[in-house]
Length: 176
Image 1 (cartoon, rainbow, N blue to C red):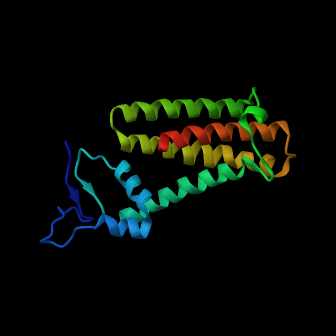
Image 2 (cartoon, helix red, strand yellow):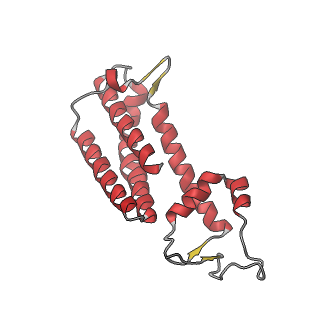
Image 3 (cartoon, rainbow, N blue to C red):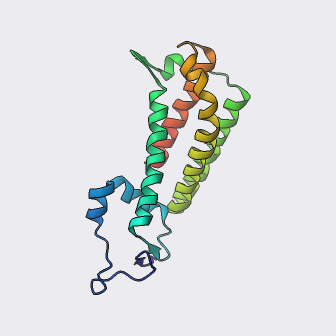
């Protein structure tokens, strides 16, 4: 049911070879969340490799997730008053907004399907594709000007905040 954990060169880890990696060292350097993310990105049914370079790559992925979440949280804050979904959310969306909500729903359904099959690596891959592609590269790039420049209660700005809120709350649950 499970493969072996191999070193970066593909050799089985063992005490006699001295190629084992202490998880506590990874946690002390990169944090427990990076180690958890590495576990979620590998196909545990096959042999998996771990090395300093692979952990660094996972750390970069973690940083992308963290920075994107920070961007979303920052744009739901309006100084003294934060975005209140119950009070401030819009009910009708532009074509772009509807596209993103459909992509979010599709991503959610795919990820839940992967989780149901214990296919964590494809779940994380699907989440990352949505986060870096649909969100960061497309939607957030377009949203920046209205979020930064429009008045606090501007309809377009509120639409972007509504969708960011929905993305944030959905992805937080899916990543957890």
